[in-house]
Amino acid sequence: MGRLSGKVALITGTAGGQGRAAALAFAREGAKVVGCDMKAEAAEKTVELVRAEGGEMTSMAPVDLSDERQATDWVNQAAEVYGGVDVLYNNAALGRIGPLMGMSTDAWHFTLRHELDVIFFVTRAAWPHLVARGGGSIINTGSIIGGRGSDMPMAAHGTGKAGVIGLTRHMALEGGPSGIRANCISPGLIATEMFEQLMKDPNDNLHKQIRTSPLGRVGLAEDVAPLAVFLASDESSYITGANIPVDGGQTLGIGMSFGEAPQFAGAVPAISEAGGEELAIDTPDGLSQAWLFTPRTGAGPWPGVLLYTDIMGVRPLFKAMAQRLADAGYAVLLPNLFHRLGPPHDPPLSVRNSGEFGRLLSMAGTLSRDTIVRDSGAWIAALRGRPQVSAAPLAAVGYCMSGPMAVWTAAAHPGEVGAVASFHGGHLVTGRPDSPHRQVGDSSARYYFGCAETDAFMTPEHQAALGAALDAAGREHTIEVYPGTYHGFAIADASYHPEGGERHWQRLVEFLA
Image 1 (cartoon, helix red, strand yellow):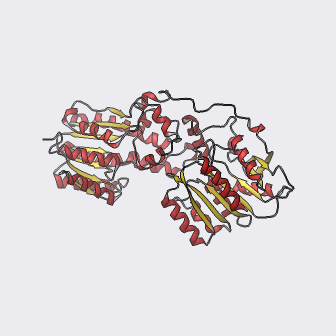
Image 2 (cartoon, one colour):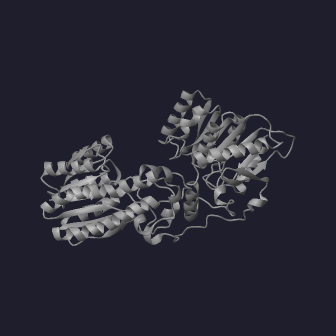
Image 3 (cartoon, one colour):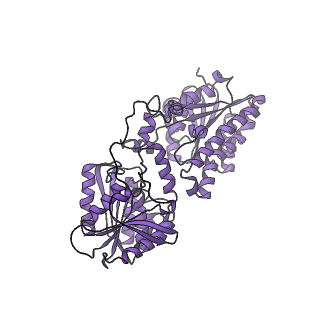
């Protein structure tokens, strides 16, 4: 007999990851597993895997657990078919991340509803069935973020998971007299499909998070499932109200170094010493610092270019990039995208530092299509007012987070911007109404997109959707993938790829000519 023989176990979110691993582990121990998920095809695949091993499992999908009626119906149908409920594993969750000040009310409510409300709905429906069996086990999925917070912008997610941990304790207190135990599993970094994509980049900040944990590796869904089996079994009959981390020691190791070498060496010139004519441009939201670069030889006027930075902002490196582009025959304006927050950080913040990366993400959350549209009008007017700038159509060039900003600029100013180039741009295709790919038809520009071969923020599916939108809009365009590169390949202090970086310069100059 297995450790869960005869027990009816309800598991939410069984289409993959920790839910699938738990379904397989529970079934191997003899449980009758009932799963659910929003993804019908993947959820059915889990059922097939369980049955292929000789286990017993049924599933309902799609089920939206944030809909109280659907959550209740799923629980009651399972109880009716199997005669009751012994174990409830609240695994499913879906949230939004981003800085607190940049998060919409809808995104905040979405996260709490899909991380906390779903547990409330399902548990309330299952509670009387557990009581009728003389008790049982409730297992909730929290997160180490819910207990200690994070220097990454995860306020809504952290709040939701803190709520899960607190709710678990109250379930234990209220359920004890009825024989109901409630415990919480709080995982650390667990491998997912997107996580694996990010980890392919040797410079991604996730590597540092792993290095600063005692076990020095990322967790797997299969690392979590055995604990869930234990908490579901009678072996844990005297454990309730506990919050148990499964994190490889990340909670202990945060901020510590386990053989990590310093990431930076050498002096970096101050921003004020790195060149360019500094301008103060009047925008609808106050003065914006910007720097104008022109060719070091020859006489103008030259075609104008708006050069947008990546998330690390204006810094000596980007000033050098602006000068290199200017020397190819352009008047290049490098604006401080974060001017509402003050001057550029000097020395600059880095994505290689986890604490600074969190601050950078929070800063990026203050930018939107609306802010860029307002700012770009002022920046364009400033360029047009300079004698060094010719009357030729302008170009907008963006990197990483500013790829979308270049597209938005062209859409907002179709009479001014004739060319847009984006390198390893992220979030060019989203589900939002203001998604950049939905805006290309509003412009009169031609487009070039240089994409990293491995980039979770610009996958082949995203590239195809972008290409289809450009085709539908009748816009001249090129989408090129740079072999062997990662997100940030064109920038020397990011995930730089020397060959890809030089090719990007060649393509950019050819495109703008």
